[in-house]
Length: 331
Image 1 (tube, one colour):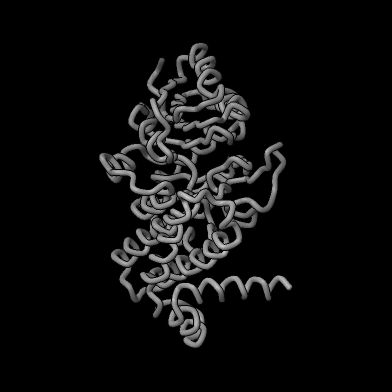
Image 2 (spheres, rainbow, N blue to C red; image 1 turned 90 degrees about the vertical axis):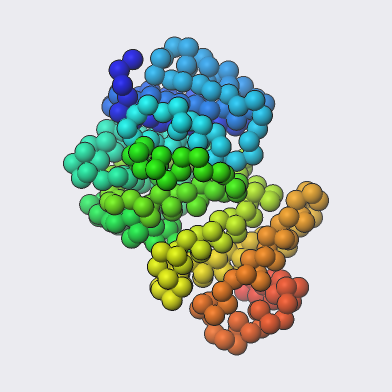
């Protein structure tokens, strides 16, 4: 096999329903100088055997199986990247798929712009592959836009104006992440921003990545994994504070993202408390309370009167006010 230009890394856990479509979208690419590295995270369904079937037929596909489930996407992803031989890395989830010219468009854009990261457009689809909602970036966003890494990172704070998915130089990733310990379930949310922050140039391609929203997705499950994003917010707040200063607009934006996530996740917990496994509740409450007491209250946008009510009355009253607010708003 010739030396691949692009290494596609795929992590898989119980993805038997969709992994064929995902792998086939790679096999159908107009650009053929790639390798696909699949790391099975100790699946209990037929995921591994489907992947092995493809690997036995195409020497561009490498399959590795973890002996036990890691509990986070980052551990198998790091394993896949460590096996990668390409100069460029593309992450592809095992229930997602890419358009036929995706690799061609991404690589050509990388070569012509000399960028370190090239992002494609994310199109959300349902379990049947039907597009739902708007894409990220939206279709009125100019794909000729060129950003510094810092500019790109800030467009993911508060809301995702751009996405963090595309190809990136392997050497950039190795410089930043080699030998780094994974500390949170959602550490990929932090890593995406960290990677963007340290890129010299970020550009865009009009190619499309189809992100499947399904009921088994980690982002849709009600468990402590969903709430671990609060730890990510804490780490991002420290990082942005160090890079921009705690009086900067960038830091202010990050603190308010943390505040908004605290409110949203407090509501989510209270609405689903009885559905959450007992062994997870204590950790979730600990994460929520830590975020509540640690947040930089002076940097939050609401009026001082609202902040005083929310933060001077204690954790239990805060929860009560959050739930009362959404109940009134819904009425």
